[in-house]
Amino acid sequence: MQLTYKFKSKLDEDIKYFCLVSNNLYNQANYLIKKEFEDNNKLIRYNDLDKLMKVTKNLEGQINYYLLKSQTNQQILKRLLQIQQAINV
Image 1 (cartoon, rainbow, N blue to C red):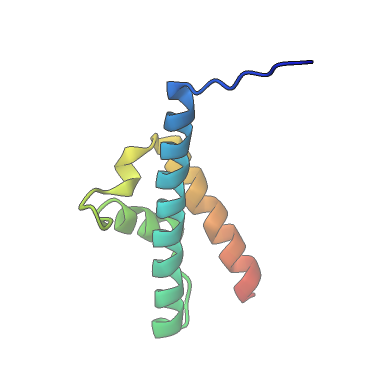
Image 2: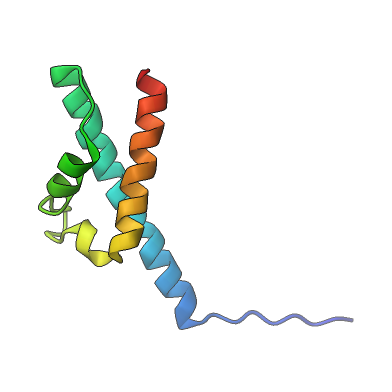
């Protein structure tokens, strides 16, 4: 008979938190991109999206952009814009 052990560490909770924040940032930016495209029929540029996300608050009143490291935020926004450009071309 083989026994197994389950360990729960603080690292698991940190990973869940960062995944949640990055998902929220992605969804907020996606909403802003789609809203701009429906209203003006054009895509937001990266620099404009970056400036918007630096002031956009989530439901808890925090700014998701500042809850993660800056390189992570930039890569999330750049990847989202790549996906949107591929869809709307």
